[in-house]
Image (cartoon, rainbow, N blue to C red; front, top):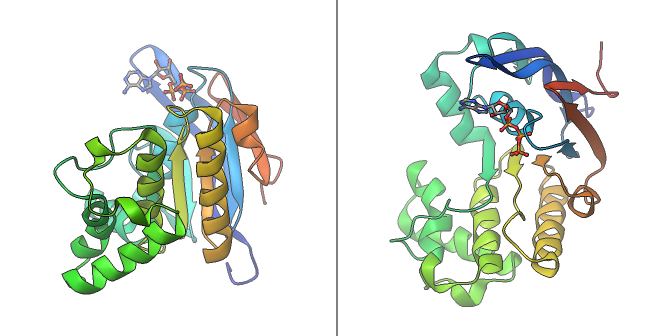
Length: 229
Ligand SMILES: Nc1ncnc2c1ncn2[C@@H]1O[C@H](COP(=O)(O)OP(=O)(O)OP(=O)(O)O)[C@@H](O)[C@H]1O
């Protein structure tokens, strides 16, 4: 199904309430392999909740999330975490690197957790640091590098395991515009090269400009024109 670039991840009529607050109120979403889709909308509209449901971090109250034909909402917690580790990568706004580890060790960590030997994991991690143009800070700890460098390390860590989908929630939110654009260019180039899809939550038009397509969320509702029957 995906070999011919069919939908990779499809969400239908997602609903989620937090107490009296409807965070999602009938949200649809579709992404294909290799596509970069920006999820846009005002603050509090439900963008992050949608991303968390798509990634299987949060379970929607109703609606379906199908990933390569499998319904995420019907999986056990263990199955969903295994899927997240094997198929998904994550980049958040900040605070995602382990402060005690070097940048190289941070990037190698997903591979080490997957059972790869240290030497091979670190060789691959070094390759990704080079690709993200931060090879020179491999031995520094996250507290010793700039915000832009740290985000490039986080992107390397998200991509090192060759995920099929990268979930990025305001990945440039803490960066100035020059560094933000650099991170977006490196993230989208790397994703296009590896064929990974990117779900990019942002409220900034200049960040969304790096996407192939935009989905707008308003009051927990999203319209996805690409939705397949
Ligand atoms: N864990 C939670 N507990 C309670 N309410 C929540 C929780 N997560 C989200 N909400 C509420 O759900 C609604 C949607 O939040 P969400 O974070 O998805 O919006 P957003 O569009 O990503 O916002 P922002 O752009 O400000 O990050 C908001 O009213 C928010 O307060």
